[in-house]
Amino acid sequence: MIEVLFNESEAASMRAAKSTILHSRTDGPTSVWMAGKKPPAKKPSGWVEGTAEEVICLRYMLDIGDIQKDVDSQYRKNLIASLYNPWTAAEAQNFGNRYLQLDELTACLQAGESIRAWVSDAPYSLCGWYHLCSIMDKYDNPLSIVKLPEYVVRDKTIVLHKNWGMVAADEFAGFLHAQKALSKEEVHLYALLWRELAAENCPLRAVINGTLTGVPEDFYDFMIFSRITKKPVKECRLIGDLLGCYQVSIGDWWYGRRIQHYIEQRRIQVVEDAERAYARLICLA
Image 1 (cartoon, rainbow, N blue to C red):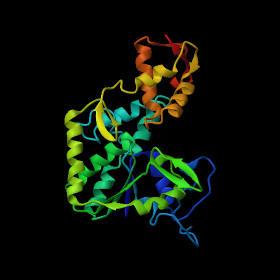
Image 2 (cartoon, rainbow, N blue to C red):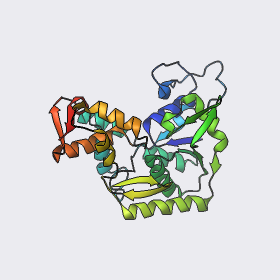
Image 3 (cartoon, rainbow, N blue to C red):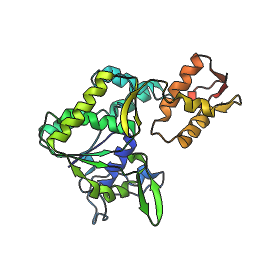
């Protein structure tokens, strides 16, 4: 079974969940376990069957930018690289190239592999799912979906998850009961929805009232201006505040891009510059 995910952190967790040898880690839920190559004496129960090599990450960020261009075009690669403000251009380019695995997916489909997609209501994930269906509309391979629920109840506690990147590696198997196989008609429906989004081709795609919808580039900008003041603050601190306050599954890179836009428009002021954008002091102009 080939697992398809649409973000590098959730793909890393899935690779760990399907690993054949496990090494404990302490630096966050997406790195609880690390993939290995030699089978252990006994694999812990609750892990997803298979190996880490069966995981494909389609990290195309299709909720942003022109989606009439091919997803593996240089335009998309440059766009992904441009969003990583804290990194150098070379670091960002190498990072982006690592998660553009369309060739791997095509090879798996041609080999007749079954595909299982892990999808949330995050815009990047829904866009990735629609696009995946537009590809699989041309194949007869079995396709199933595991949709992330709004919440789970664990030990009398409600746990909210906005995307699969918030799920620890050892928890993925607990969602397999929700797996649903799709008919060819359902795959075709999602493929049509993708074509409609591509025809509209708005700068952004967001989930509004549960529906994936094209929106203007400034759709999220009110969030920035609701938190920034005349008091200087480090850009990373402001972005961290935005991520905590507005959990809409858009990355720090998008906030960084929009902040830079408003610096150029002189609506946000750089009080103290720094080599890396996130380290500079900024305030409302």
